[in-house]
Length: 142
Image 1 (cartoon, rainbow, N blue to C red):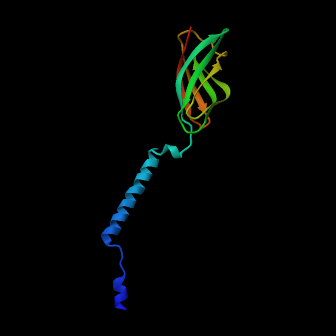
Image 2 (spheres, rainbow, N blue to C red):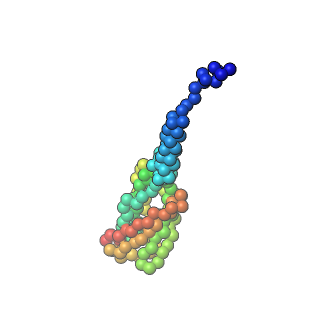
Image 3 (cartoon, rainbow, N blue to C red):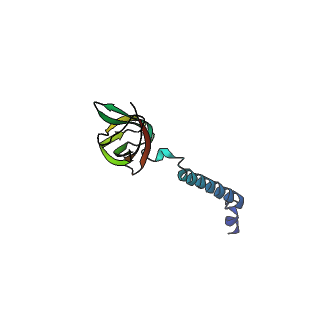
C-alpha cells in the first residue's frame, strides 16, 4: 500500500506558483486592454469626426456644407444640426445622414432662417445616433 502512494507524482509547489503568476499576468493584460480600448476590433461603434465645414450662398440662400468622417467600425447617423450665429440658435433637421464605417460624407444644411454676412463665424453641433455631439465652426464665404 505504501508503494502505491509513493508512485503518484504531482506538480511541485514552484511550478504551480509559476503557472498562477503567468495566468494572473495574462488576465491583467486583457482587463487593461479592454479598459483602455486597445481591443477596438471587438467593439462595433461609430466614431464620427468633423473634417471641414463652410457656409456658401446659392440663389440667395446660405447653406452650411459639412464634411464628416467615420473612423469607427459601424455605420453612424447624423440626426440633426444645432446652428448658432448672429446671437441666435436654431435646430435644423437633416433627416438621417448615414456615414458608413471608414467613409467620408458631405452634406448640406439650409440656413435660410439666419441672416449672415461674409466672414462671420457659424458655430454648430451635429447630433448623432449614439447621443454624442460633434462641434464645429464654419466661416461664411462671400
